[in-house]
Structures are given as C-alpha cells and as structure tokens.
Image 1: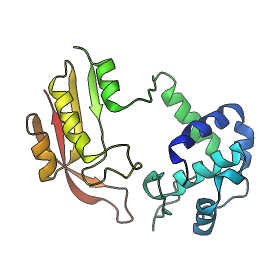
Image 2: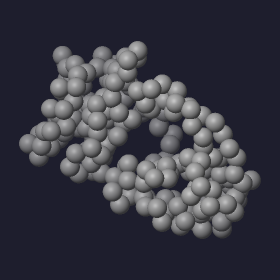
Image 3: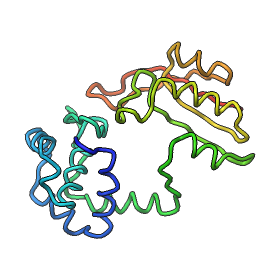
Image 4: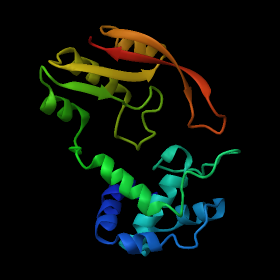
Length: 204
C-alpha cells in the first residue's frame, strides 16, 4: 500500500468534510476476498481523495489485525466480519465520541515522553513486540529503540507501565525495572484465544 503513513490523515479529513459521500462508497459493497485484493492492488494515484479514504478504511477494517503495511485478508470461521458495512457511520461516530476529550499527538515516542513527563504523569507504553519491529511500517521503530526507550524511562519523573512479549531480549533490556509475568490469549488470529506469555514492565 503506497504512502501508508500519510493515509490516516487523509481519511480523517474526508470523514470530517465529506462523511455522506464517504459512506456512500460502501453502498452495496461486500466483505469479500476478491474485493479486498482488488482494492489492495488499486493505484491510489488513480482515485479521488474520498475513494482513497474508503479504500484505506476497507483494507484496514477487513484486513488481518488491522495491519496497514501489506495487509492480508482477515476472516473468522465462526465470527462475522469486523467491517460492518451497515454501521459505518455509527462506528465512526463512536470513535469520535471516544476521542472527543483526547489530546492526539503525532510525535516520536521520545518527544512525547519528554514533553509530558512530570511527577503526576502516568504513561502506558505499547511498542511493537520484540521481533515485530517493522509490523507498523519500516523505519518507525527499530530493535535499538528498545534500549533507547529503556534508557529514557530510567530517568522518568512519573510512572509507567509497558507491555511486551516475554522473551529473553526483552528481559535483558528492561532488567532494571519491575517485571511481572502475565498470561494472556491472543485473539488476533484465525485460531481463537492462542495462549501467550507477556511482561508488564514498570517503575513502581
């Protein structure tokens, strides 16, 4: 998907200014692998802004795990598609209500931490899993960023909770902090409720 990093901003503008036309793009559409692959292969430069936004939304909602970079078709054997074509406006409205009192930043994590850190600040930090650094796009987060993050958190004035997969590399990089083992189940899979081990990493 070319220029995936810029697409969410375009989608927000289209929903804000052209909601009715955006929703109309999904009239009589179906959640289908053929349609998914057709939209994935489409050249965004041949589409209008609204069509590009609708394409992004379809691929994100109908794709496996909401992955933006090189998405793959997501399906469940016993569950309905995550993309509800009859409730698009309701879904967007619910998201807007949820974010109405949220301050959204678009900065590198190190700048966000430095800007908002204080004695009364609590950070929940959710980086890519170890060995999955490029899942959100190349160059956004690297293996070295785990060490940089740990170094920055060591001087934090506030408190933080960080969650990561429980593997030796994570334990080594964040060994200076409190590590709590937790068992969870990954639902982002065609195999439901896959057992997994994670770590809660904190400074309190």
